[in-house]
Amino acid sequence: MSIRQIDETRVTSLIVSHFAEDFLADLRLDVAVVGAGPSGITTARLLAAEGHKVAVFERSLHVGGGMWGGGMLFPRIVVQEEGIFLLEDVGVTVKSAGDGYYVADSVECVIKCAAAALDAGARIWVGMSVEDVMIDEDDRVRGVVLNWGAVEQAQWHVDPLAVRAKLVIDATGHECDVARTIERKIPGARFDTDTGEAIGERSMNATVAEGHIVELTKEVYPGLIVAGMAASAVAGAPRMGAIFGGMFLSGQKAAQLAAEMLAQE
Ligand code: 48H
Image 1 (spheres, rainbow, N blue to C red):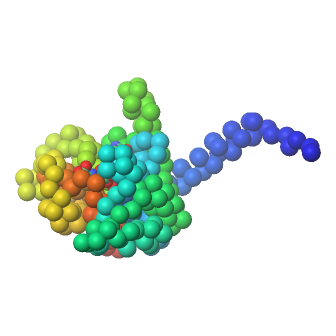
Image 2: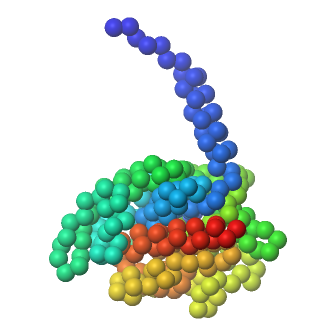
């Protein structure tokens, strides 16, 4: 059998040129989703399926956020009836456990949700952290400012790159990192919350947390929608533990809202 010659520099050239081509194509987006956890990838899938140009920026090297680990590393998640269809739509097997509780394999959830988002046309960039937002003259969020996640971790001083987006979705989980950045950097910034501040999440109460998550998924600052745990955190709502239906439903609501707002542009 003859051995196929491989030109190592061709491999390098293909990686760099294709990265550049795809990244340049994403410099102007309809929606930039920050964070590839369950809410962010669901939002991205639904928006991309409607033909919107959407990319997800994920700081770590993997997608799935807190979903991989299920509850305390037991790789299963619990979902309530209302959220199941968003998993079944992407081919996840959801088992009924009675009394309105359903269980799914968290690894299967991550893989299938992410694959479906890609198939729908969303792009997912891993290893890229949103360290700031772009703001226009009237303080509306107009895009994200990116750095490598590894550079952020090393705390090196490396200047960032910028991507424009008509809307930004903060799906960064417990940290509500994008909202926190706005709070830190825009003097007098007020959010659409009871106090006008990004309040921070409260201790666990699954009933209250899951009951309010969809209503809390909204535009909290001009151009910025919060989804998933970030929505709870900004509003000062409780956490819910390893029950995930609300994360998918919140992702769906964020996609609906974003689509409505884009239609009005
Ligand atoms: C780029 C960033 C940045 C940044 C963070 O935590 P997640 O899984 O988020 P959700 O809201 O989709 O799901 C929350 C769920 O996983 C969970 O934790 C639950 C239900 N907890 C309940 C409880 O009581 O504990 O994913 C957020 C993602 C992560 O992958 C981060 O790495 C990423 O966002 N991220 N990416 N730029 N600045 N900050």
